[in-house]
Image 1 (cartoon, helix red, strand yellow):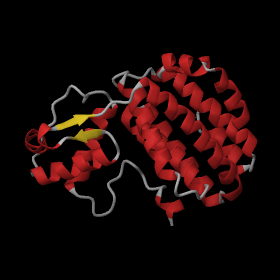
Image 2 (cartoon, helix red, strand yellow):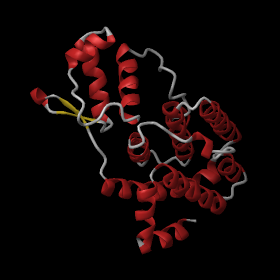
Image 3 (cartoon, helix red, strand yellow):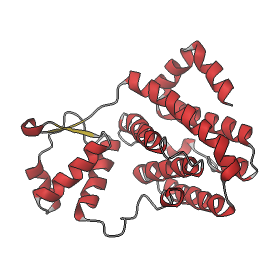
Image 4 (cartoon, helix red, strand yellow):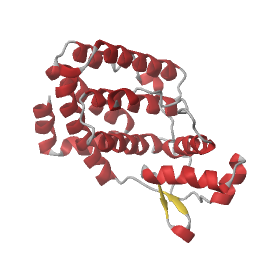
Length: 243
């Protein structure tokens, strides 16, 4: 079932994973951390030599990156890392708030004890990697956490939209800091209160906590975007309505 598949660890190769998965993951890491940018040349020949694999393997990895919107393959012109503009990021934040809060309306009703337990495991994994200051792993696990909550809502048509939204917001906020996160700003478990509210079936509290969680992350990772977001007089009203 879809609701269970999303709980797989994002850091563990799936069963039967090919070499292209490793190449894909490493290139994704470099893009999210801002090590590969739109100014970075990407060629299949160079990557094949770097990863000691065939160009076919590299091609598979690049196609996966293209599928998720991280690169643009332009035939003989080459492959280029895409960018998320400020305007697109603003739209993505609003979309994320709407999707996640809508999902919580159903997740708080449908969540099983097993799924609540799994959410706590994912949260624990996040804290473990945060203690190691592993930005990429934290981003991967954080997306898995939010997608896992949404998968419980059983709205599979919207899940790919949220998945892409989360990925590009992470890329936007993390890459602009080149992966240098001030981890000392983070204390406690940011996910536990949300999980507790879901376990108690309290949708209103869960939505309020989720909205605060998203906007706090925005203020820490992209303060300028946060300020622009809240300059819009409709934003505060929209968040109030969601909460």
